Length: 353
Image 1: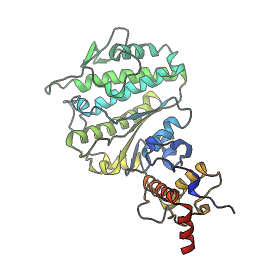
Image 2: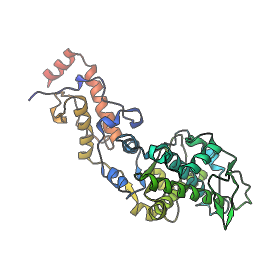
Image 3: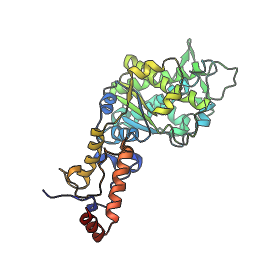
Image 4: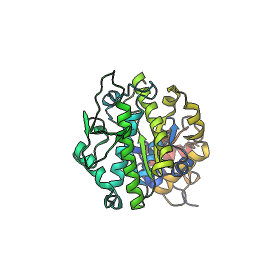
């Protein structure tokens, strides 16, 4: 049998999914199936276990016009921190702002679809977005920036106890307890319009994927903890109500396990045990990951056992290879070490053995 060598290619690929052509050699896991079946809305894993790779696969891997990645790298957390619902408990203080943000992202998703854009029910969504953001595809970082959200007569028509809202201010003093009520009413109007567009256009299920929540985070302070809890609770609420009222909607939150462990709220255990997928890898699945890259880089039937280089360490035999990122780092380092050696060095090493 002809042996293969890692020296046959220049690079093993980037170890970070956001920088790599990960879709060329993605290894599907149970997490993908659970998310696609809407059986999980929270994905937990240590750093480097493949959360971003899953996001990219679910939003880029196929023709997925109704699945959108929301990367929170550079997100204006300080702006969001000011959009607090003083009428809610501390734990739920940011649920209404996240529900509104999810509603806006779903609105942009359905009206960006050709069939959704053609629906007559898309008009109020289009007008609301244009009136408040200057277009129908606002940046994630701008959704909570306006001081006030305008509600024109022929746009959305949210109401509280029969009283129609003419606008919703996002800047509220601490004594104001109406913010959550008004923002939830607006979000519900958007959800209803999204459902009408989806039903009219016969669209597939909608999904949003919140990733990179830990970027720039050195310590988890109280405000960020409350915002992360608010996002998880809002995503669960939208998922529940989506199944009951708005159709198939699944906002998915990807979070580092250590951050999740630090969060404290009453429904945490219930969520962990029912609607959460815990990303874990074993030696066999890590070997599959490395061999998938070998087949993409070298030959369609390549395996780790076919590699002729005697300096290689099996990717599942070393303690650092406990996650996809560490396994790929080890394999890439090994490939680099092999490629840097001269033919005479490699010959002397084989002779010595």
